Length: 196
Image (cartoon, rainbow, N blue to C red):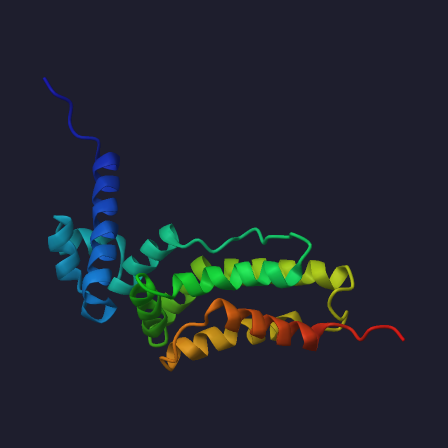
């Protein structure tokens, strides 16, 4: 006599199939054409199963991004602040660049109109990255690399803002040279003057 299937394992199997289908469909058709119906069909589950775990396609995609994003929550500290910031910004650009850009940009766009999704996006993906950036900048401030009065929240806006600006206006994602130039200018504004 065979044992009944383990519901937890079956649920995890379905969850993984849903996330895999979501990733594949986002890559193939883009976030705008992604539907719960298509995800369900590709994953071999019912729409009811998906809606039992997630309230919207944005929530499904956010879960996928949460599992696949490589945003570091422990900031690098090589002793070279510019290089560390470059590494961290590159991770963000990579998350928002093909093939994953459809998912990332789609969730960001949908979050503009869905406060619950926006909150989840901030808590799960954006805030951990911001905290890591701020931690790295604070260490630089404590060692005198950055001006002691530098507003780290404004510094983060200066670093993040151009990436989202370029994404929102379809100006192309920053390349490594652009990121280096951005970091140079931001650090120049935040670095204390050399003693005379």
